[in-house]
Image (tube, rainbow, N blue to C red; front, top):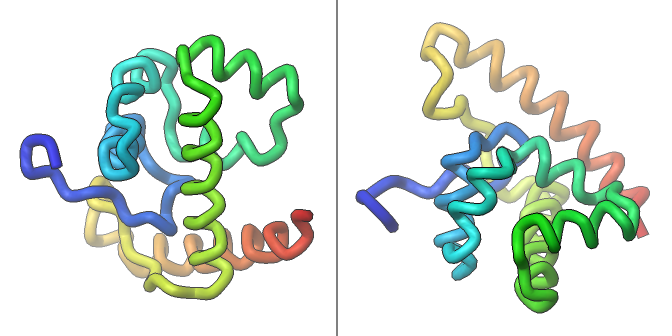
Length: 126
């Protein structure tokens, strides 16, 4: 990892910061896109919304980020892997590094509810 930074918690990807996304890109061997994702403000919420992108929006994203088609497929496969892991409950919900510890219990409750709703939507995806 760059600068000994810890990669973000994978199942909490929908709350990742732009920096977390960059660390994840390094982890999945797409680090060459780190700067352009940062310039375009791609955070976890944006990655989560990609599942409902139209074909036109996908093509616009690929052009804007100068992505190769194969790299975009890799990105989508890795996002899907994270969602499936979430569906299976393979990771404990944790407070993000940036949140104050006094909000830990409140964050964990909210994140569990959020994950449950995302798991339901994952079950409905083709």
